[in-house]
Length: 288
Image (spheres, rainbow, N blue to C red):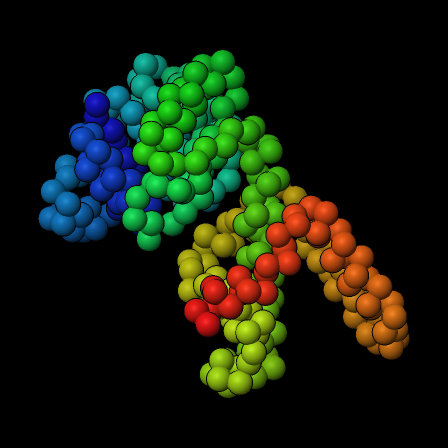
């Protein structure tokens, strides 16, 4: 089987190229960055090309490009995609990319796949994947992809593109914006170096979350915040909750604060009884 990876010069494209080549697949990396493609060719010994027409000979086309440029890329490559080819995209949002594939591609065998990990992963074992088929042909393709991923240790969930984006607004969008606001606030209040040396476990965990987000690509995080459905509602909810808690403190309402925290604790225990192990888990994460 031959696979062409559009955006093969990017980190995730390169990760999948390396994994699939080791898995015995013939891999072609296609992209615009000829210098980077040549580097990958020297490092991995894989075929590379900058010509969009080169994808025509592949059995499967994997699209690994930034979500903001996805539609333009699909429009560019669409004339070179045959009706019998399979096209899989791996962006972090699904509604708009899947709609773009339906709009521009002649093939019915398209599928949105979200690998819930980054290019630092060793392999697919214990990694989460979300598949977002939208019809009979895509359902059949999703079953094949699911079987392939699970055979290699992946954990697979199937949902609609809409369900995916709504879930990701909570799973990705909420932690990201909380981390950014925390980093912004901490830097405004003091220097990280002092906080790292003097802060307790909760502060250090917050610093770790903030640092992990700040070290990533701002363009990716901006795209997630702008494109994930429901983020404006989450931003509003965070503001409302912060205002409510701050009001309790400003009013000196100690009993109200305690009652609200106890209510949250009870609600959380009902949803997941193991949450009481969180404190010891926090120490384990920090290596204490």
